[in-house]
Length: 143
Image (cartoon, rainbow, N blue to C red; front, side, top):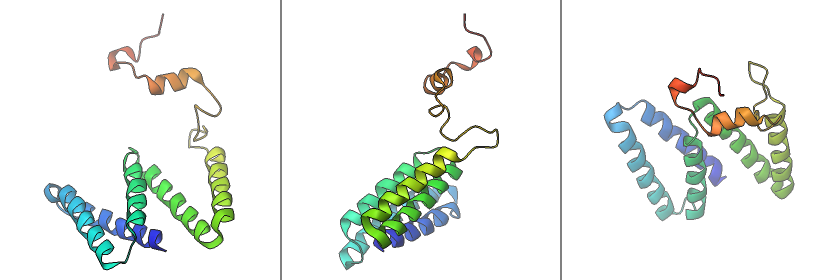
């Protein structure tokens, strides 16, 4: 239950930082999160480990450049939290199987799977993603 409450609270902090003027939004979000987290631990609402795990997962979501993909990860995380909370280890295992199935079977608008170029494996596409060429060389063919 603590994890779900923290997800809800962090969602509220995200919305608050979006609707705050740019000069204040970053510092307000960081300071607000620190103060609220510290107060919640001192009052006894949350265990320190719960806040740590939630913050690590949210920072991982922010590391993703796509807002939509970050929201999808958040939805999957809440789904997995609910299943794990209701059914413990079997819920966690079944939830991960469902998430992996969804990721491997969903296709994008250009009919490529989300896991492309890893599955189905395409070395040249993976190489072009991992090792970027300078922009002037992008249109030229390799010799």
